[in-house]
Image (cartoon, rainbow, N blue to C red):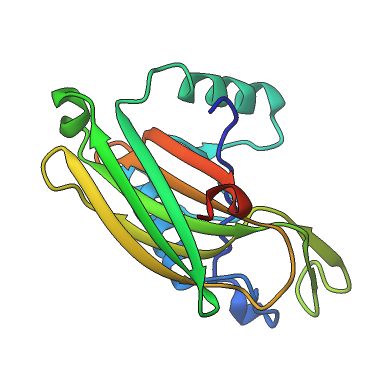
Length: 197
């Protein structure tokens, strides 16, 4: 696909200020810390925009964001991914597969993640610097699962993903990244309706 697979992974380490983020998950913060350490840095903050191996992208700098996105999409993906989703018993049954194209792809030691995201959400801020504001959210990760590892040149994995109680458009992203550099290797980004069978 030509467009970037954007995800908002809300973190829980600001909850002590009196306004817990209802979209936060501990795994999101742990993944953020691991990605920052992989890039040779130590400081995590929010909002921290990451594009591929770049973990400190200034989201207010349109030129920098555009360049990082262009660079991330400049190379041919070294692996293929496919996903199929069934909806049953209030949850999603997800099956995805992957195949490495060559030895160079294997050397990057790719990890694969699955994310269910939701658009059109809001939250009322009760405390902290944004007290009294209504925040609007898109691409909010409601479930992150992984990382899934390869067996040789192939990946076959399954996940059961609970559906959120709130109404709002849902989508799925399956993405692979290098465990050595954090570079993005491939992504599938689809509305849920497009991958249900």
